[in-house]
Length: 370
Ligand SMILES: Nc1ncnc2c1ncn2[C@@H]1O[C@H](COP(=O)(O)OP(=O)(O)O)[C@@H](O)[C@H]1O
Ligand SMILES: [Mg+2]
Image: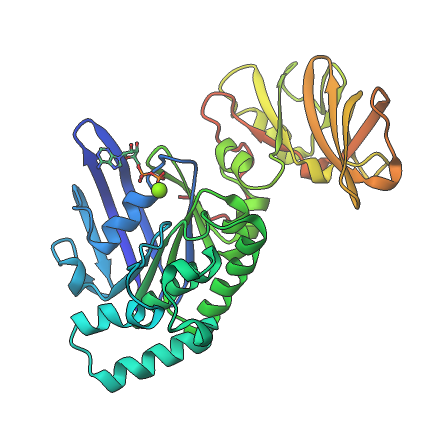
């Protein structure tokens, strides 16, 4: 087992800076997810750990050892890619054995590791098949098996579930989480899917444009996003954002059109830090309700122009003075398209961001910023 440490790491391709000043410590045995939209530098970061990309600047350590100039084969890592890249003419057994044979591992040891991995991944009955005789999910399990038999200090996975259909993705997600619990090996898992990140990661590193935005547990990212990007990226459907003007200093309530946001004292102080006369207010669809809350509540009045019935709940698309808000409410309410609704949420579920920098205006203790 091993830690992985990025210390001011940069990766440049000519004019393009794919990864900029990355500082990240991945703990021994930790399941760390790198998440962010396409092109933000996730794969590049993972390939630097693997040694498949040179580091332009900074230091990368695996355990205590600086590995900047260590060849991939000497890094004690195993990588699982999005495309499984199995050898088509070889059986599952031979696919699993291939890397070990290259490393001149003893035959009995190879057999033992293959049997162990096959047991963990339920591949026993498939060992003599060729890849073309397997389903997508089974092929991905073989690709995982090929990484497991290596018994590496660090597992690297780059969007390993993206070729699977939705149901299989959920199953395999749980299998990988179970695998991590069982092996206890350090894992670095890359995905663009925030649901995968939230469900699998012990900690999540959110990236955007080559820059690490925030690192933390799923709950700390959800509850205390440091900026508008993280707030909008984590959570589904996305957080609602409304830009409103600040009428003056010392205001206790922000109002604009159909929106009313009472301001607890910490928010009032925070408004002094906004760079202009406007502020971005954020609130999550799942925190909105049609009924009243006890205590101070923010409210939004508008017209529900689209209602999506989901069985246990309803997704409301509400328009208020030309601005759209999404709410998830109990389906018992049976809102009809065209209904005028008043949505409420507890004042403490309201977030505020600087419209220019995107930074959160409320600093919360215990937040691990990037
Ligand atoms: N070999 C390369 N040459 C030039 N630019 C590259 C190369 N590989 C990646 N990039 C650029 O680096 C950025 C990050 O890419 P990547 O790490 O693959 O993103 P992600 O995996 O998050 O989608 C992108 O802008 C991409 O175009
Ligand atoms: Mg990628």
